[in-house]
Image (spheres, rainbow, N blue to C red):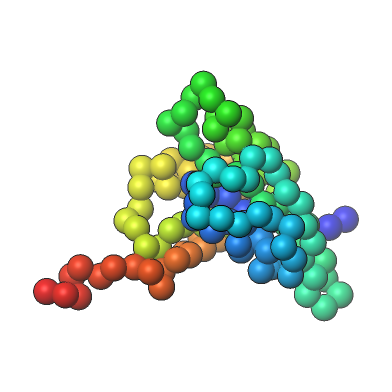
Length: 131
């Protein structure tokens, strides 16, 4: 049986880009437009003889309860429940948001093993560095 790893985070943090890099594919559509990924996307990560299923998910957004965004979030949490490990992608060019904290709290409540991934940190504007 293969291990399964879910890639989650809020919208537009780079989940699909990471998925494409790890699967050495272009099966996840990547754009600057937020909310492009709507459903779970499965791929295979191969390292030597080891193989792992990766699940790319849409962005989790708990603020939109009665919309398609809520269904997208539900699909991401289904992927978390299916997985033995979660890659939690965070946008390093911004401060942590309340939504990032909510996702982290939910992962902890589910008692899931996770690895935080800091993405886009090359774009960070360091205002304190300018002082």
